[in-house]
Length: 237
Image (tube, rainbow, N blue to C red; front, side, top):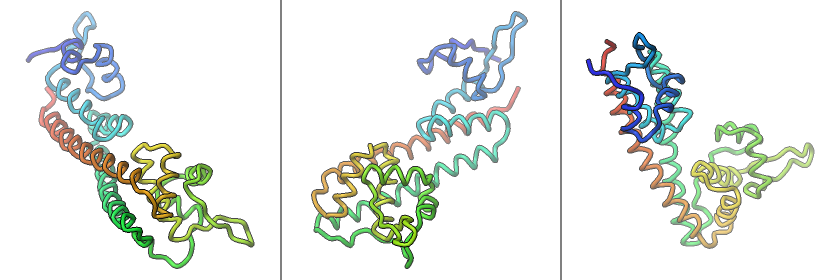
């Protein structure tokens, strides 16, 4: 069996040997054997694990990628697969949102105000119901309001916020753009354009950019899945 030093594994990825040791410490690599003098001895399994982890990061993000790899090295495959499934579900939702926003953009170009498919409900949402729908915190909704992204009416009797179909449409669009890491200032501008049916250049640019990101993430997931399968195919010595 061939053995590798931390520097051998590090060289392939352009990282430091200490980073490799940190990955092992954090559970992203299985524990290494030690020589009688205390030096680590890595094997092809460690090399495959490192490739898999490095591929998981662009596919699922640092936090989720680490969660997945740590679960795999600990033998908790069901937990790892559930985390992967969550990312795939998130990506699928993004694709659906992209299609919806593309439809909005097409209608806005024709100065249509009926582009967005409003949620099918008869009563306005409370702030808690809207936060639950988007899977964000109530504090996030309030922050969007402070930035001018949302402008809900308030109940005359209690002063509580009321989010009607147009507000929910705006919140869905804001959530989509926020996931693309766009600043709230830009999102507020885009949402106002959607409301007014005016110039759509900012929305079109955001849509094209995010579609490229979604495609790139999908390809990254495919690559990560292949490398993770390679690691899992290697039995422990």
